[in-house]
Image (cartoon, rainbow, N blue to C red; front, side, top):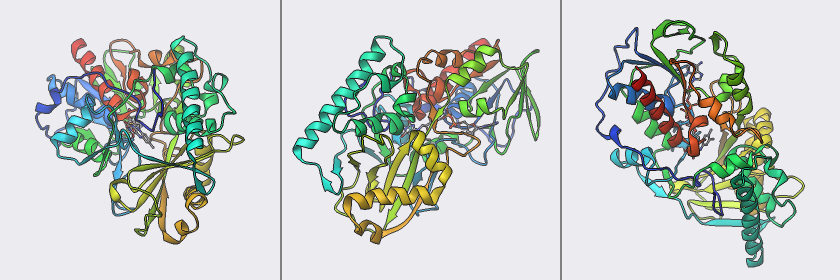
Length: 447
Ligand SMILES: Cc1cc2nc3c(=O)[nH]c(=O)nc-3n(C[C@H](O)[C@H](O)[C@H](O)COP(=O)(O)OP(=O)(O)OC[C@H]3O[C@@H](n4cnc5c(N)ncnc54)[C@H](O)[C@@H]3O)c2cc1C
């Protein structure tokens, strides 16, 4: 069950996990085994966790990664703004048990506990009154309560069919929960999927970037970059993975690519995947969360650091909105979040359109000063990135069970891991890690 005031990646609690990685030896990068025990496809959080775990268990591993960097959807980039900008994950959720919290502490990353962040709520160009805050709070109870009731009663339908639509501020809550948290609009959100997600507090932001922690995790692992898997043969003894650089043969393969990539046909399978697996991939498509990052000249526009900036969303256009994180770590940045269908459309319209939209929303709230002090913006490109094809997976209403099918191994050689199959921790980077680790243990035991 989820509680009120769900916020971006601030909603799930990880169960206690072992911390065996803490004593993990460094792995040499240069010598890639040519016939490894296991081939891992994808060097994101799940693939890196799987590789570390397998090596820890004494197995030989090769990770093939299509991109020219590791991390996948965990990616911190500092070139655009001169400060770290996480294009993908940025909150370490459920800090007590998330493996990345321990890594961050161990590697002395600076964290900011963001669990009870303040929020500015606007109605048009003014701040909300106390009565409006009360309405907002009531809308949260109503929306969240309806979703949890449905999900906990085993009802797996579209969120839009069970939640109140016409309360003041219900559209703002719908925008938070749908596109900005789950990556889909309420008509595409499975009530059961929502209710099955674990709570997550405390959650932390990372000054140097969450992606930087994942990059550190992967340092020294045997990853072959710029090496897309194009064909996986799993019919005979063992598995072979074809890449433009050649074919690698192993005893088993752990596939960690997104459901967007799985469904795109970029990797072909011999024999073809069984119908039930193909159906599961179809039933758990990618949702979209996108970020419009805006840089200003140092003027704070009357807004506090590390807070949320939210506004009343039109009931006619729920989810066509962008909510903001203001001045994280006192950087001169606002990070705007948008997603769902609106996010896909704006992504298709391009970076300038998205940045214009986001800046326009800030101007609408705090006035034209925002435009005067604006320096430059950027917009994430997960929608068009062929190596992700979206932000994270979201089962279609009625199809929650497909996550289980997606996770099922094929024979004793083709295994599936990643955020889409991370149990209650789906959609998160920590969940992807745990999924990779768990799958690697299964493979190890089998070998
Ligand atoms: C905008 C955004 C914000 C987010 N915010 C948060 C957050 O605050 N907190 C949080 O915990 N999570 C967040 N997430 C989710 C989190 O980033 C992901 O759940 C997690 O990083 C997924 O890890 P993964 O290993 O499952 O997949 P990926 O990171 O996608 O790894 C798969 C890898 O496979 C590679 N690949 C693809 N095709 C091939 C191929 N043919 N051959 C070889 N390699 C291939 C990809 O390049 C990629 O590196 C966010 C995601 C996005 C997009």
